[in-house]
Length: 378
Image (cartoon, rainbow, N blue to C red; front, side):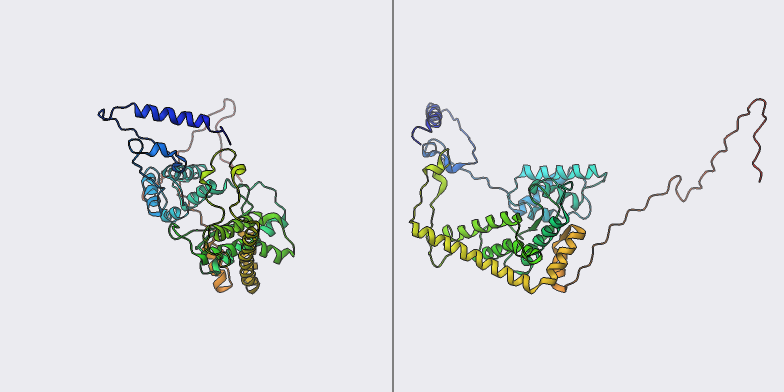
């Protein structure tokens, strides 16, 4: 919008003037950092100015595991801890965020009076950072819990049964943040590229929650709003950005938004395609979502009893891990998790190898006028 960036341009010009004032023989090196290199003015990047660029990317899964090991030296970890699993479940985390995750896990362990950090505390810390704190105080009706359990069971069973999905990690109906439940899958390694079949299966998984709700209630709820939004965005990206539509071809629709990063970007943006093309895009997006819906519905209809078993298990135990869901899908049976046994309480007093001293019999004080105490007689 005309004149809207005058202040920004003045700041840029002042910086360039200061940099041009240095003598080339003074041996001064200017270093700067930004997390938005895409919006830098080209004048800053010309030779003689910031003409060397070093990109520091976020750590990959191996890097995250090594960072976790470094920070874990300052805390006591339990024997069940697998830092590789935590690293897989924290894509996009920086080193500072990983350190904060361990600190959060230490606080959780301290509140529970545990002497070490276990996998339970690390999972809880990761989930708290990702989705928010548990809201066990949320007053949910039995019907809401039932719908949530079936919804998440639908996500879980389709995730396990499709070929091109990431391994299921866990599914829970414990409310967190704005969500009443969640289904979590972890990639085996960092995602550098996505295949079309993988994205189609992801759409099917997102649609499975709504389908499972309809199975049990013969109705619809607002709980699938986030799933519908996610599926729509994914399908639209397949059509408009990745050229995965045979009907529209390998053409990018919508252009690059990097030129619109300041106030008024929505007013400045205009469609680079016709209304007819827009209708074609909508048709293709709907086709992809409908295909995913039909795929998920077929799987759920064919495995209704297994879906019901997963939902009922969630209602009873609130959280199931991926291995338990896979066992239900494979065998049609569920083995309830055994409650952890409390460690035996150590005996009080002297050790077994040392004779326990006899307690000293206290001397009874004499009360004047009544004489000494006499033993009780039957």
